[in-house]
Length: 170
Image (tube, rainbow, N blue to C red; front, side):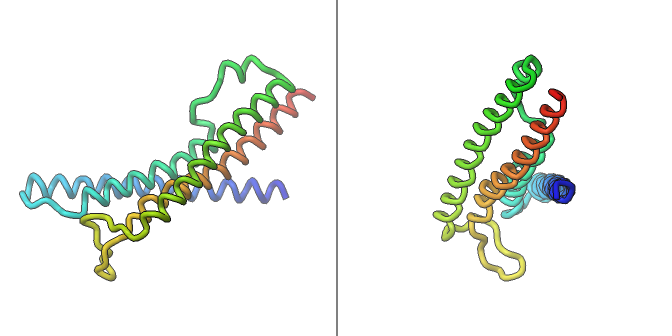
């Protein structure tokens, strides 16, 4: 069962990392298009600035989940390295609990914001398939989705750290 969860976690985080990298590449291309249309063609694109901003927001919130999973975010390294055994387990639990609290607030608040603004439209951005204006909820949905993915990553990372600490104390 644990190996299945570890495989699922690895696949999920790889998919999230690929999506974040793809969004960063798309944002760079869209931003370059904005520069070309503004300065070379002297007719600025109406959609590219908003699209680039939206892509970057999504990239950041997806990237946070990968950063949480890999342990790339700021930690209390000094305290963690100085502690052993039960103290390290307690420190890990406290850090995970505080992080979980922040992520739950982010998920709840993000959901509330995305729900409240569902009738507002993103200025200058039109769906290329339907011609309708795009709801700004798609932009704000990055917050709860990124937070939920980060909670999954936090749970996996905390379980991994706890198991490693227990193994070291034996």
